[in-house]
Length: 220
Image (tube, rainbow, N blue to C red; front, top):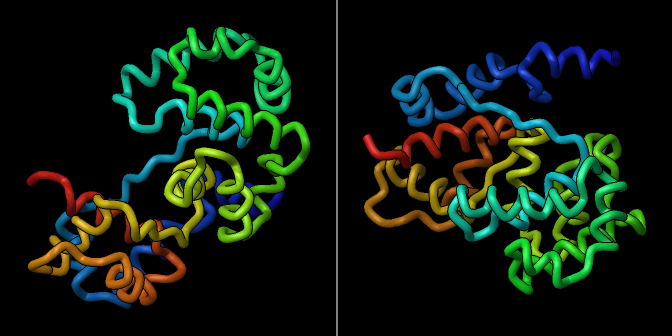
């Protein structure tokens, strides 16, 4: 196991030390430090990522649906390609008729998105999970958002909650902006530009700051 891999395992899978991250955020932003004190320990959890295809396919299915309904549709889609993961799943999905996928509950737009995801996986446009871990954030976001149905927000969620990247600040996220307004006592909903400007001081641990902003947006 590499030194980096050992470090990530010791830090709960993150590519950084949360203790160091919190110390940095407390030092660089007194108002954020108060939020950290109010919320308590950093408790963000990572989900496993065996392949980008599997993660993105799930993300596409779940878009704009209640979690329970999405889980049911995702299970039916997976049942059409049983026992496969990664590139094998992409190859299997490519051979499933449209009628079967629509019968599983996919909308036309999600069916087309999954078709594009499978094609980009098979032609090598979508990197392997190992290569993705070596790419910088913006380069990886660029690759991911070339897939139909995958926007910047979805790519950022993957970076944060699957790859444990430290520097992600999804300024367009409603919860982030709402939490920012609450934490920094804004009378009106902050703009993405306002969040981005303040967030410059949080580098390189903006993912940790984001997690605390989401907590600030939650009902008391």
